[in-house]
Amino acid sequence: MDEFRGPSDSQFLGLPVFLSDTAIDGLIRWRMSLHDVVYILEGGVDSNNAARTSDTVERCATFRKRWMKVVAVRSFHYDTREECWLIIHIDETGHP
Image 1 (cartoon, rainbow, N blue to C red):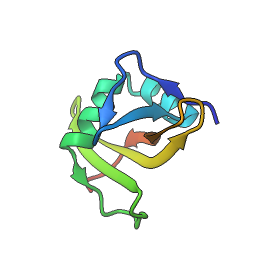
Image 2: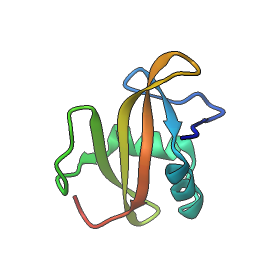
Image 3: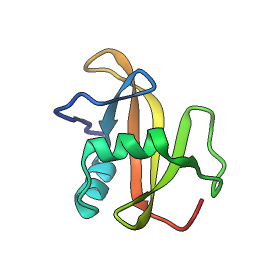
Image 4: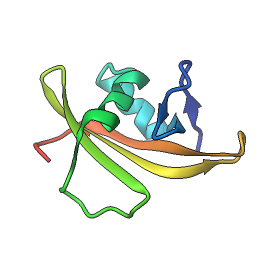
């Protein structure tokens, strides 16, 4: 799986944020930036639509008049040899 590190080196809960290929597709589709994704993670509300493991964060927030969901998993980036958050899903959703 290829990951992309944003040019701003954005962080969430003290760890760097990377995007999966699927998340990059969502980023492009919804015309978002990595800053927008981190903003949703930091300021959004927990989604209760699906049961997630303790290493997974699923948050929703309003973005450009749409209710958006971002899903991140705590992971390890072997190239940089550090723990990180990997964004695996970005999409429009109903209320959490």
